[in-house]
Length: 428
Image (cartoon, rainbow, N blue to C red; front, side):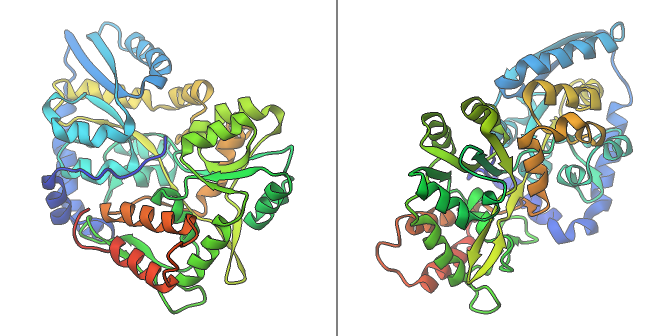
C-alpha cells in the first residue's frame, strides 16, 4: 500500500536523528554505525538450539505466502532448533509507531516501508543486517540504498514496487494517447468519463513538482524540510505550476478522490484511467480484463512546456528487532523471507515486484504491466525522505486548487503559503 510519514514519532527518535545526522552528512557518521554493525554481528554469532520462538509482523493479506516461506525455513533448519514462528497482523504504515512505542514487546521481525528507516535506526530498534555484502550484492542498488544509513544495511529489502504510475483502459486509449495528460483528459471528456487521482495527498502531489527544476527535500537535521516551490526565478516558476494544476483539475474529466474511490470508479465504469500503484493492479485487471494497461506517468503542460511527471519511489523490507531474544535466528529468518526464491514466490502469489536482482530480471516480471510500469516510472522518481511538516500544507493547497481557488487568492500567495509551511521549523 502507499506510504506516508506518520504525524506522531517519539521525540527521542527525532533527537537521535538530529544528533546522528541524515542525508548529506551520512558519510560523516559511518564510523558510529559500523560500530553498531560490529556489535550486532557479535550478538548473532551464536545460534541457539532448543526452543526458539519468533514473531513476525506483516499485513494479513500476505500471510498465506509467508506461511509457505516459514514452512520451508523450518525444513531447511530442521534439527538445529525447535521453532515456533507466529505471524501477527500489522499494517506496514503503522510499523514504526508500533515498534518504537514498545520495542521490547515488538515482533522479532517486522515488515516496513523504506521511509520509516531513519526513525527506526534513531530509536535503536534495528539490528543491522548480518551478511551485509551478500544481501547488498543480491539486491537492486536503489533498494539497498533505501535500506541503508551511510554504508550500513539496516534491513532486508524484499520489494521494489512501492511507487505509483498510470493505469488506463485500452478500450479508450492508445499507447500514444497516454503519453500526455492533455490528451488523456481530452479522451476522457470525449467519452464522458473520468481520470482519477488522490490529488490532495502530498505523496501524489509531488509528481507535479519533481521534474520542474523547483527544489524540495529534507534538511540534514532529519526533521525539517527545504522548499522553493514558490520561486519567482527560473524557466518554471511556482505560479506556473499552480496555474497548470488549476488547468488540470478544472477539466470536467479530472476527479480528485481517495485511492479507494479510484477502484470504485473503475468497477462502475466511470473511471477509465488513474494514478495509483501495484496494490490495486489485481482489482483493475479484473475490471478491465484484456483492456488493462499500465505505463509511466504522463507529461503535463507547464508554461507551454511538456514536463514529465515525477514520483516518490518506494521499497519494502524486513527489519530485525535489536532486542530479539533469538537475534541470530531472527536474522536467519529475515534473510530467508527475502532471498531470491521467496521474492520470486512473493511475485507469483502476490504480484509484488522483487528487489532481488535475479528475480527482478525475469521475463515473468517484465511481462506484468503494473510491475513494468513502476520500474519504468522509477527513473523519474526519488526516495521519499521528508519531514512531517510536508503533508498538511500539501493537502490544504491541493484542496484549494481542486476547488478552483474559490477565494481567488493570488497564485503567488498560494505558493508562498505552501512553500513556507512545508519548510516550517515546528514539527506538525
